[in-house]
Length: 307
Image (tube, rainbow, N blue to C red):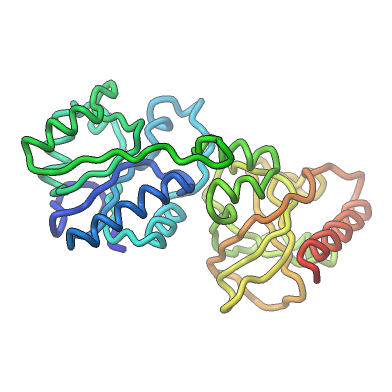
C-alpha cells in the first residue's frame, strides 16, 4: 500500500475512495473496505482511503477525546491487510477544520484525490461545523462526475459495531467480545527495548515493548500471542499497566513473557494479540508475593493455551 502525507499532490490516478478515522479497523470498517475493494475491482481503479491524524476529536477537545484503539502505523497495517492500495493521511489542523463542505469536495475529493466513486458510512459528516452530508455529496457527484453510496450499519449480536463498543469491551476485560466486534483479536504493535530487567530477577524474563499508546484501552494481565519472531505465533503472558509493585511508572508499559523462549530480540518489531484477560493489575507487599502471583499467572495462561 502506498501512503501519502496530505493531499498537496494529486493522486496518481482516479480513485475509488472511502473516508474515515478507522480507529481499530473493526467489522464495520472492514465491511466498508470490502465494498471499496469490490467496486475498485469492477471499475479497474485503485481502492483508496482518506484518514486523519490526529483524530478530529483529539484536535477539538483533547482532554475528553476517546482512547485510541490503534496508532497510525497499526491502523495503516490493518487497512493494507484488507486490500487497500492507496492511503492518504491528512493532517487535521485548524486550516483543515475550517474548510467548508464545498471546499472539501472541490479541493480534496475532486482535485487532489480524483474520486470517481465514493463510499461512506451512513453517519458521515464533513466540512466546517460538520455541514456536509450524504445529500450534498450526491449533488456534488452529479456536478463533478463521481458516484456516491452509503454503507449501512453493521450489527453484531444486535449491537451496532463501533469503535466505542470495542473500547467498552476491552476496558471491561471482555476480550472475546472485542474480538467479535473487530473480527480478530485486539493487537498492539511495538519495538522491543531494554528495560530494568526486573522480570529476569523474578525468574520470568520479559520483552519490554515500546508502545505509542499513552492511554491504552485495556490494562491488566493477559494471555497473549506474539508475532514477528518466526513463522508462527508464540504464546505468552503479558502485563500492561503501571507496575505498582516493581518500579512503578507514570506511563503504562507492556511486558510480555514468552513461554519456553530464550533469545536476544532487542530491536524486533512485534505484534501482541490480546486473547484473554487473566486479572487486573495489583499492588503486592513485596517481590516474593509478586513472584508467586506471576507463577500462578503463567500456569493459568498455559492452561488457556492447553500447554
